[in-house]
Amino acid sequence: MAEIILGLMGGLGLFLFGMKQMSDGLEKAAGAKMRSILEFFTKTPLRGILVGTFFTAVIQSSSAATVMVVSFVNSGLMNLYQAAGVIMGANIGTTVTSQLISFNLSALAPAIVMAGVIMVMFCKKTKVQRIGEVLLGFGILFMGLSTMSTSMSVLKESPQVVEIMGSLTSHFLAIIVGIVVTAVLQSSSATVGIILLLANQGLLDIRICLFIILGCNIGACVSALLAGLNGKRDAKRAALIHLLFNVLGTIIMYIALTVALEPITHFIQSISGANPGREVANAHTLIKIVEVVLLAPFIKQIVKLTALFVRGEDKKPAEAFELHYIGAKSVFSPTTAVFDATREMERMGHMAITNLERAMNALITLDESDIAEVYEVEKQIDFLNHSITDYLVKINQTTLPADDAKSIGGLFHVVNDIERIGDHAENIADAAQSRMAQKIDFSAQAKRELSGMLDMVIKITTYALDMFSHNNQEHMQEILELEDKVDDAERDLQESHVQRLTRGECTASAGMMFSDIISGLERVSDHATNIAFSLLDDDPIEQQKEQQRAQAAK
Image (cartoon, rainbow, N blue to C red; front, side, top):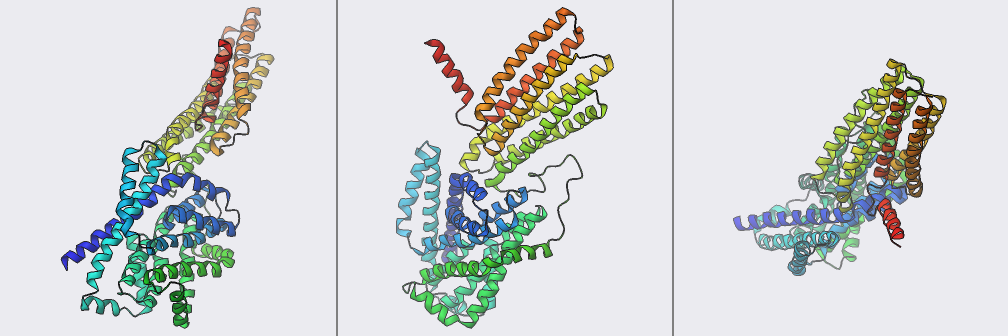
């Protein structure tokens, strides 16, 4: 008996590890692309259901899908109605795993594992390695199933085991078993896989399997509920949508099975070719589809119901030094971690741009309240710089989707560039204070020149932040042209201010201050250009320089 128990434990360990390996590999390979699909194609609940089904079928994890949705709601990318559709679709998509398991591929498992190992160890291309990780996980999963199946085949010879399994006749108790096992394993697919094996060995009847599967529905909500605990109110509501959907679906299906158990069982057996494993897989899929069909028309009501459990609205941060998208009140998901960091950096960037405008206004008008505000906002920017950098270090140590992992280096540069823009705003505020203390006067022409250059710098910085945050390349060429214009303007203004000095139209201290400010604005333009092209594989600036060098060589 000890050998049998060890065999079951080892098989279950391989099965769970293989499932996680496969899911992680798929998420790393396709996570960023699938995130884009979730972001842009969930405008209606029906689309959300279709996308949620497809997404979860691809990454083989409803838990990962629902946690990602909770994260999107927390960051404001997705509203609760869109989230409800995706969550419902994820419940259908997760049944793909049990369908795969029901086709016994254990004989091919060693060959699949070997293929995965070769791709991971001997191929240098990242994409090939990711595919290898998926194959490796897939093969290990079936090797675990084979090990468990072998142990269970011995168990069915034991009269005591058969008697214990046969004594599980209470439908309510079967649901409790499904909830507990799934909550412990953190995977409804794993629980259904175990049920499938027990059914294949004749240890569980399909009738009782149906009720255990209903329990799996509720147990699968644990991951999303845990993810939503630290989130904002809407994130909690998104996690609650998952729970309410599964609880309501379980109640409906429990009543249906209680009333018409034999006809339903007969139908499932008729479409499964008298194969107990296929019966379990098909029952799992059919239950999920029926639940979605019945509850999808009531998405609005389910969303409203969550407001009764999670009351109130999120208050705007009272303290200035708070993070909005990452930190204690965020929902951490590796697939959305880079997206959340980008949102926080976008917020930091807008603060820096506004502070630059405020500082220049203070320089011209000598408004002391504006100067004080510049210094206060600069402290906030410094806080965000340190917090975002710490977060990037943290997520860089986790398993990220391949595209996101490649972008981490660029993100470190961007947060530094934004912080430097904030520093230049502070330098201008310092100049405003000096101008007040020393009673330095600027000519009307100098003020116009500063204002004109600032307009170009604000424009290029705004375009750059939009291009970085939303991959909006609409203004890419304009950014390159503005960069050249700012460089030209800086040279021209330096010359014109020298001429004013020569003619005695301004003092040396005013000329020096003017020169420092336009040099600072030109450097802001450089930082903006860096931000715009930080995540592109091919740098258009370098391409432009190469073309110029090639033309010069001719």
